[in-house]
Amino acid sequence: MKTAVVVGANGFLGSALVNTLLNQDFEVIAVYNANHDKINHKAKLVTNAEILNSAIQPDFIFYLSGNYAASAAQLQEINETLSHYVSTFSKAKMVYVSSTNVYGSTPGIVTENTPFTNPGLYAQSKLEGEIIVKAMQHFAIIRLAYIYGPGITNSSFIPAIIHSAKEHKKITLFGVGAREQDYIYIDDAVSLCIAGALQSENHIYLGATGVSVSNKQVAEEIQKHIPCNIEFTGEENGQSFYFNPKQTFEILHWRPQIGISEGIKKMLV
Image: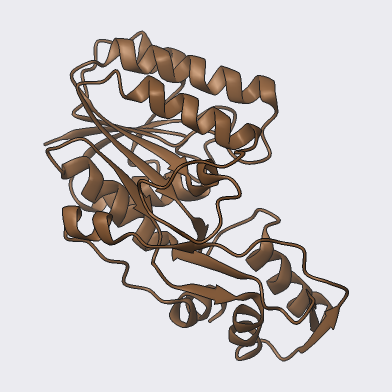
């Protein structure tokens, strides 16, 4: 039986990853920070200090710590902890979950090899993490786009407009709702992480579907399941994002299975 350590196991992606690994007969060690209420208790629950001071030598480490709302000090601490994992578990395969935010404001269609343009603080911390991880003999870096699905609790676009539809019977979009984004469903994000872990070679992967949809399209999918009005106001100043993960698809023989229509339905029905 293979042993997988999931760091950040109480998060949206981490808790889903723990469940899938358990279902695939991995021995799972779930590392949490402050809370463990979302973690399947069939996993072994530990803190960073406990796992780093143990004699365990896992086969895989999935490092999922950090989010866009973290402070500069928190991001620095996350990467310092990552360095400890790299030095402690040198024989493990490290799967580092990065973000498509690293590409910054790069225009046009982004691929795995697209240069970075003015990445923000969070993205810079992810790039630092990528550099740290490359010291491992075996690694996979996965730059994930916008993840969504049942159980997401942050205040990002999809959960925010679902809340508005439920509570206020309306969704308000800027401009004409034309801003586009690539959304990857939680189950597909999990399967990509595992596919990256099982790939023998070291690569950077683009965790996107290759299909961007507009804010208006997302709102209309929600409207199919929640009676509400779609309204428009002001101007849309947000950037649209487009990705071409062809290289990732080819290397891993992997493709996302859930489109936005089915994904929204799974969240609401």
